[in-house]
Image (cartoon, rainbow, N blue to C red; front, top):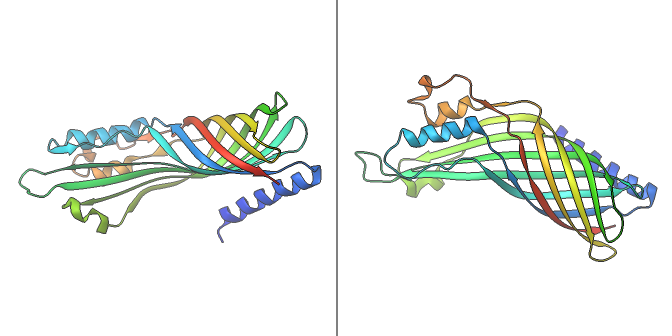
Amino acid sequence: MTVKTKIAIAVFALIFSLGSVTRSQVFVLAGYQLAHAPVPDLNFIHGRYNETRSWLADTMSRVKILHGPLLYVHAPFSDRFYFAAAWTYLHQREFAQGIPTGSVNPAERQVRFRVNTRKIGLGMYLTGGIIRIGFGTSLDFGSIQYHTRSAANATLIGDEKWTKVVGKFTIASSLNMLIHAAITEKVVFMISPFAQFQWWQTEFAPVNEAINSATSGSDPSSLKSNAKNFGASFTLGYGF
């Protein structure tokens, strides 16, 4: 069991124990998250990939909209305040394909960009009733990853293994709004708009070297971007 897993288990156990001590319901929810994540230097690299391959029929798209599942634990500990913890998996997967000059087979490259996060947060309700609105903040830790694979014959791309080009530990802070709607006494639906701010930038120059090896030497040696993102999550859960 990794240190990160042990920390996550400890946080979830703490939240459940707090709910027990305060005799409040602890809600366990699952759902989906969408986020807008402009990453300028990474998109510069994707643009270079397209510019230097005029034979592409399908060009590499920009990294822009990330999406993925999440698990969320929500524990009110008074009429006004609540603890929260979450695990999120945001990603975007893209590809480029075409027939290179002098070839008869379509070549293909696939890439995937991931932002995995574990969140620990605190918030305050501003309203009560069946629909409650709250605001909070969280400390987020996780990783930013970029993988790629390619094949000279696109029909064989599934046989190729993914190569991790970037894999960096990250810390971030988030501002979160919460709309908590009680469907029944125990079943709830939550919408949570958010904005996440990474504490430092991620170096994407290794991506340029991996997918643009012929031209990366003429590009800047450092290609750093802050993978800040904002979006919303939609979850359905049950109170214990």
